[in-house]
Length: 196
Image (cartoon, rainbow, N blue to C red):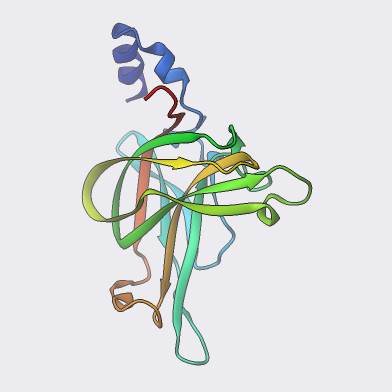
C-alpha cells in the first residue's frame, strides 16, 4: 500500500504532501509507534490484515465497583513514546488528521493529547482535547475518517488518541459494551492545516 501511495504521489507531483505526515508510523508497521495509556481495562497490539499491519485497541475488562457501577476506559496513543508522548508541533495551530478503521465497539472517542512545555513527566502536563469529529461508531468494513484539532497556546507536543470510555451510571447504552470489543486503525496521517 505504501509503495502504491508513493508512486501515485510522485506521478501527481505531490511528494511534498507525503513528507508532510508528522506521524512516522502512520502505517502501523512498527508497534513501538503507538502505545496504551497504562489503563488495565484495555490492550494495545498489532494486528495483520493480509500483508498490512494495523494497530488494535481491545477492551479487556469492565470494572465493577462496590456500588454496582460498571466502568471502562483506556487510550491508544499515536505519536511519541510512553516516556514522552506527542510529537513536536506548533502552539495555537490547526492540524488535520485522517485514518481508516473498523470496529466492533459501539463508540470510540478521538482526541488530541496536548502536552505543555515544562518539566516533569508528560502525563502531568497533558490535556486531552476532543477532535472534530469527536468519535466514530462501530463499522464492519474499513471506513475512512478525516478531521481536525487545534493546539493550545502553551502546547509543545501533541499525539492522536483513540479512547474507549464508559460508565453505567452516566450512559443509558452502557449495556452495549462487552469485553473483547475492539477498534483497528491504519493509514494515519497528521499534518498542519495551514493553507487549506
